[in-house]
Length: 160
Image 1 (cartoon, rainbow, N blue to C red):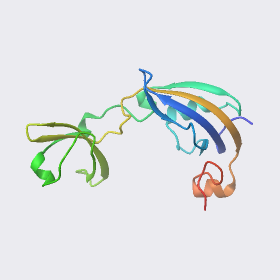
Image 2 (cartoon, one colour):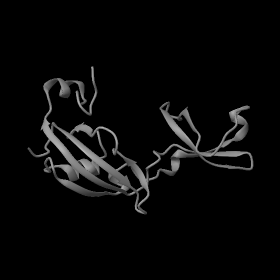
Image 3 (cartoon, one colour):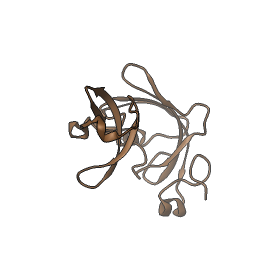
């Protein structure tokens, strides 16, 4: 069976950046499962898996714009360090904060200099070209219940 809209796809993957640095892998875990066409994985990978079948190996290069997006400079903020009170702030720490529009987001500390903390609200992989090595394990029709719930049930998916 080919990967088409509303099929459940199970696959193992390795994800690297353009320099070959390992970003994520399913090695040692269950295969990752998703429903095709439901925006459960980055759009560029979903598009490149369309039409493939179980047993296929896919090398997919996904530009940032089709992955986690390009870097948005408006999501980088400089905040006075005293706004953190007595909390010790270190590079890489993450904070949940509200934006001016009232939306909540996760911000990562990317710099600390002269009493100012630089926070980045972009996804950690924004601006990164993604290099996936995918091995498709299984393709099947999604059940009505899976489509209604919006996620995969059973192996590699959500259990009720």
